Amino acid sequence: MTNKNTEHSKIILGIESSCDETAAAIVQKLGNGVKILSNIVASSADLQAKYGGVVPEQAAREQLKSIIPVIKEAIHQSQLTIHDIDAIAVTQGPGLIGSLLVGVEAAKVLSLIWNKPLVPVNHLVGHFYANWIEDPGNGISSKYYGGKVNKNTLNTKYIFPVPTFPAIGLLVSGGHTDLILMKDHGVYEYLGGTRDDAAGEAFDKTARLLGLPYPGGPVIAKLAEQGNPKAFDLPRPMIHSGDFDFSFSGLKTAISQIVALNRDEIDKQAGSKFIKDLAASIQEAIVDVLVKKTVGAAQTHNIDQIVVAGGVAANQTLSEFLARAVLSVTPHIKLSIPSPKFCTDNAVYIATAAIFNYHPTENPLTIQANPNLSLAR
Ligand code: KG4
Ligand code: ZN
Image (cartoon, rainbow, N blue to C red; front, side):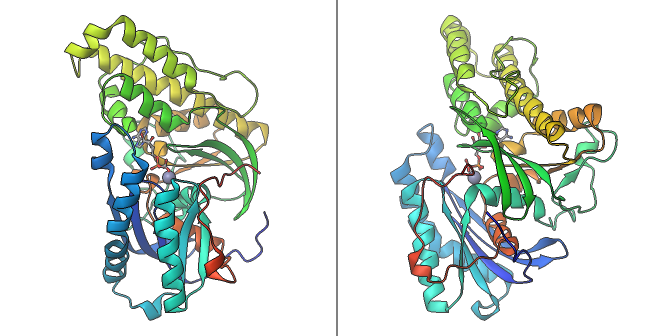
């Protein structure tokens, strides 16, 4: 994919509805990044948690309920009028078809009646653009590990350095785990990805085996804070495979065997040391593989910038281990990880992706939701 038209100082309304979040946001280009003018996210995650995961039809119904109020609120919060908005960006895929259709069809209608260009965005590419957001809370969004790293420096306020190209991009979300070589905005090469479960899925599925609520990632991360990550010797599938592919389904099998052998312990003692140790061991097994492959990709391709994105990028142990690995192996590598609040699904990064990859479709009505879009080509 090539992209000559990389930078536009526009105001863009982004719409995201790929799964169980309905989101709308307005952003404006600021320097090498973007400024957030509004950011609204409505989530049906609580409802999904009741069922232990996302129920596609229910997620789509919730999207329908939320889409108009969320867009309205995003415009209201920005204090702009429709006339100030230059274009609309919308997640085209991948995701759940029922959910995607709600956002895509709403965006098409608005594009038509407001007479605004419509930019379709690949949700997976969009995730990476969380690294180009200026965070009004602390003046930055991306954490930049230029110095000594310890628990405290993880919260240090760094200046706002947007990532530079070429970069190694690690996407770790609920449905995807991919490594790409980003040569420029919109120009990337696929290096590898998961052959079965995604990293987020590994968190969610092992959490479910332990009787923990959905989504499992944040719950496991919380329990892991008090657990011993060396307590269980869990598999690190494909860690030494020498390529950039991943496999996490073996972890699920290992945990189901441990659960079967320790049923009483797990049923009787929610929040026990046993569960905390297991959670810490699961988290470290996943993080070890992600870190090894990502730093390996940077070394193999001689790249000095790593960009991390996706819901699992909110995991503090992943940030910490990546930062340590980078510093110990190749200290010149810069690491960019978004603020946790921009790692999970939102419309700010969708609008931001459109700012840097401004390709409106000639006829907005031709845009079709595509649940199977990927980063691989
Ligand atoms: O990117 P995302 O919000 O949605 C998708 O596009 O898939 O990612 C959701 C995934 C879930 O699997 C969730 O368990 C995981 O991100 N996640 C985390 C954390 N926060 C969210 N995984 C590990 N640690 C976290 N703190
Ligand atoms: Zn996502």
